[in-house]
Length: 352
Ligand code: MAN
Image (cartoon, rainbow, N blue to C red):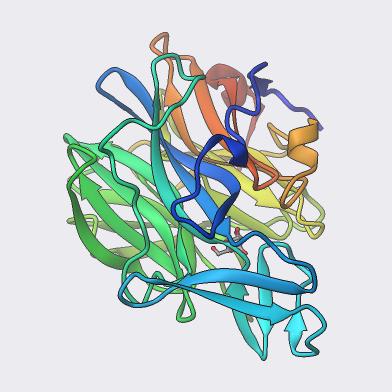
């Protein structure tokens, strides 16, 4: 497998110990999967901060939000026969699924793209209402005609769907609630309208017929989505055999819209690959990489909260035009950076 990512030597850029918890009684367990954007000449991350109480022996405890925004801690003895804890990320208790951590989104910025700090007076984004009681996660940021569109995963006992908020100043947000209902996530809006319409990649999941595939939709207003097409499926026997999902907003190139996406196999190894969509009609996929372009390799990618994972949903294009700097979650615990040559990715694509 070829890995063409140039990882930052400073990795990991951010670890859980680098940020304070949002409130007393919780600790930061994971920092992961940042959305990325440029604002006021700085690089900004919308980092997913996953928290839970300090774990005590013989119990598992995790926070959830109430519908008014207060936090309740649920505590379950680990020997309870109704408790299933085979995945570090989720538990099942008495037949109901919960997340082991509660995520909110925090803004960090940097002058050099490597040293990030929390600026003053930029409040965190937190889950609100009954569709976000298990938190909000994995934000994508698209800048379209001067407005930043934030699409993120909204999680609650109702399911996992896509939420939308917009802003122009990162202090005041317009909230549109859930724009794609459960089960859906990994929604990345294109940063340009095509033939007058917004376009977005998204990832519904089907329990029975179908699977975890990437779809594309269009919309007159970025809120109401239709004309859905399934464009990228999992591939049996490949590195992306079990699930695929979009990364950040597609990159406009001469050859088409280039999307860096994640794929996982049966062993929950998450790698990155790429595909290319037609410039005029992005429902047409022109080409796709066969091998991953990035594979979990380093210590911080192989072991952590949920090891063997590289996952990206944010990048910037460097001014020279060929380098894409991705920020990515490693092992669902650390935030890291890496660079790719766009030309090199395009060379690796195989026509479909
Ligand atoms: C999966 C993983 C988790 C995430 C939940 C809900 O289990 O991606 O990290 O918290 O889905 O989105």
